[in-house]
Image 1 (tube, rainbow, N blue to C red):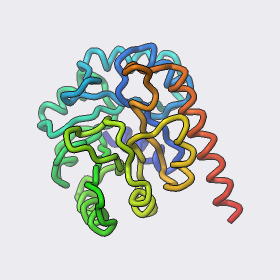
Image 2 (cartoon, rainbow, N blue to C red; image 1 turned 90 degrees about the horizontal axis):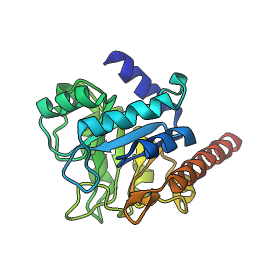
Image 3 (cartoon, rainbow, N blue to C red; image 1 turned 30 degrees about the vertical axis):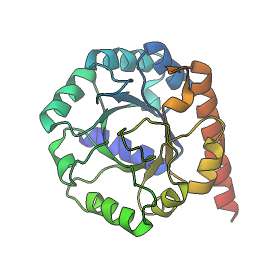
Image 4 (cartoon, helix red, strand yellow; image 1 turned 90 degrees about the vertical axis):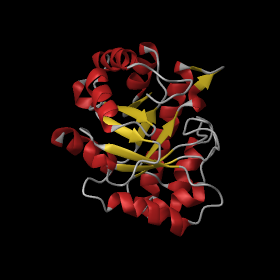
Length: 241
């Protein structure tokens, strides 16, 4: 775990991280990897984009064969209130590097898992910044802290991947404090604006790179290019300031 934790932590410290989530088919995982994605996301919670560990492993192996090992491509499994035993088994079967917690898992939960974690928060609007910071601080004060926080859009019946836009203002207030990924309603058309406003270390997309509910390789590539260009431009602006 230490090697993966170090890699995940370093990747997030570098910033400009792009995660393509909800992958189901090897061709789309390959398209994401070849276009420059840093994290490949797979859903293991009850949802339309749910995959089996075997499906995820096929995607991960295909993507890694298509890219250089030096890229350090990381596979992320998304879970909602699953048990540590269930998560651990899936990590081994699928070959996951990171677990993304999208439920009501307590701050001590990451310490029970075999790989680093990303903790997702979906603040109910109009959530106070102070309240969100207090919740996040509890996770980052734990013995085994997440490698990153993910701010997603709130949806009353969905734990994630709903396409609901996150509160960018709230995310902007949180991002200077901890490594933060922005999710929720992002598309190739708006990701540059989101990066400019929020200044996250990374962005996460699922539905925004789909056509009729199916991943679209061209939209995947367009999203990654738009995000990477925006990250470079934002870094240049920050250096010039």
